[in-house]
Length: 408
Figure 1 (tube, rainbow, N blue to C red):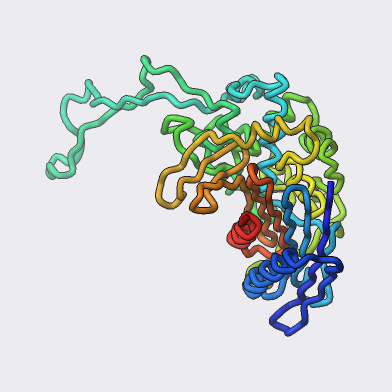
Figure 2 (cartoon, one colour):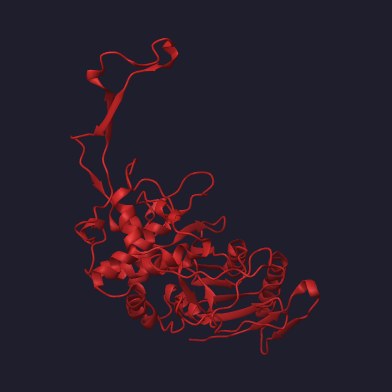
């Protein structure tokens, strides 16, 4: 496979540092593309106040990587291919891919109820229709006898005995249609913003599941839930009787050659990870995870994420292509005005990127100090990855770059 790496290091523009480019042997077309990406990057650098990011593009197997800005407030600090970034919400995509791999191999049921894998004493929430009727034995309404406006008729609400309880299925967790909230309510009992993720354990999860009640039918409404992905990762761990990170490494990272991607836990060295910055240029506190790791705890490099992009485009690892293709298939169509007809796949979103109807499969998001984005167009085999150690979203930048390389 032909690979062309272009390194473009544009230092903090607000301090008037020049662009530094290593682009020997670049064609006119490549130079034009580079110039267009440079212009988009300059606009985004202004938003991050010079904190840098890396853009990787893949056009039919030909890769180019561009570095912009500084990895720290010091303008001479430049990221490289081995620099680690927090992936945040992109972590959930890998969890969904792992789930799909197991489902296709018959190791777990795509539409199995979650109760099948939980301990026997942990009852999963189910939805059952509730019927409310006036309390027959009340006789008269209740309230202040002297004030009729303050009187009311008591009602009793009970599950409909003619309604079959609807369980949460594993596929609902992967498509964010489980009815579970983004975060469990009992997460508020844990003190400190930076310890929410690292201190939430399976015991906390089980306590939540025992008390939570579903008030609406499941699988109809899309509601992004980190809790749902965390639960899916926990069930995978229970099913394989192994630590989730070990399963993910063996089943996903090793086959794709992503040797630098992993979770960084509180006992690990923090020197591998770039310093993350908020939009106001403050140093962000690093996230550490326990049960929520499958939903947001991954760290990776541009080198590894370019391998991931290449695999999703079908250029490498044909044995794994069926699994990735399976996750690309849309399951849900969001039709509200804000969603712009976005489709939901297994760990991915899908949206139109031009008037000709071309669609991009994508995912991304931010943490307190990092932002990430990946998008690709399968038919033309073109895609983009952006990693930043600033919390400023790179989604808009990513789609603009994708449109550039999408043009014939």
